[in-house]
Length: 28
View 1 (cartoon, helix red, strand yellow):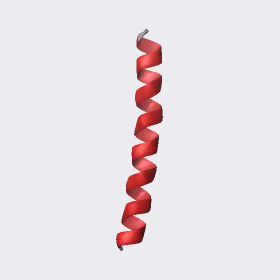
View 2 (spheres, rainbow, N blue to C red; view 1 turned 45 degrees about the horizontal axis):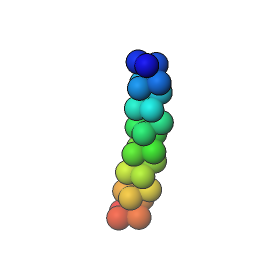
View 3 (cartoon, rainbow, N blue to C red; view 1 turned 120 degrees about the vertical axis):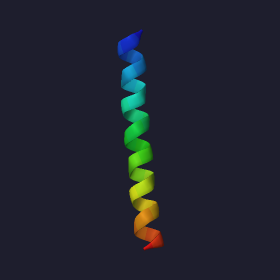
View 4 (cartoon, one colour; view 1 turned 180 degrees about the horizontal axis):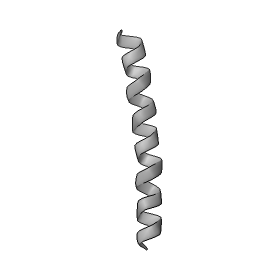
């Protein structure tokens, strides 16, 4: 259960990080 939870957080974190980087590139 915990491994699946942390795996989902890792995937979500990567998606958020990618979105933020793209957003920053567009804004700047």
